[in-house]
Image 1: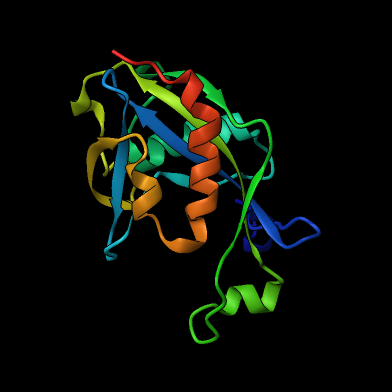
Image 2: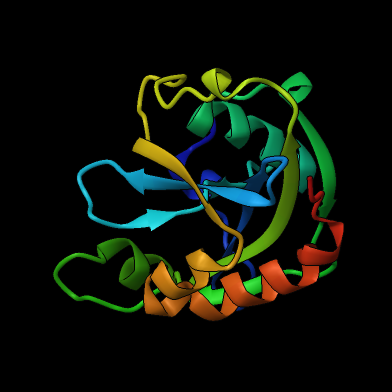
Length: 168
């Protein structure tokens, strides 16, 4: 098992490598999930382990966060470059950022088309679930609903990946 410092290895600018996951259906809607113990909704996302590629991390996170296996989806594409966002600093709640030089996330975004039945989406696939509810929403709705500090990244990812979207 990786030490905590290795798992959260930062680049020289203070960003942690991460993947963002967008799953679409035949109606060009996207899977939107609510975080456990929060009122916030977001796309699934997660860190890239030191020994894995961004693509491998996307498939791992796809299973851990929403219970989908590689055969349940078709990879439509990913963003060409890393997209970055800074996490706002809150002194009482963000010890890790202050003590380790953490600035934010740099993400590769992946667009998947759901091939399996919706019943294959399971939020309890891991022992530590991230989400407690999910729903299909219009493709651009997440840009209006995501927290402010992630909005520009969501807009850039959705804009870049939109041409790959399968429309029924």
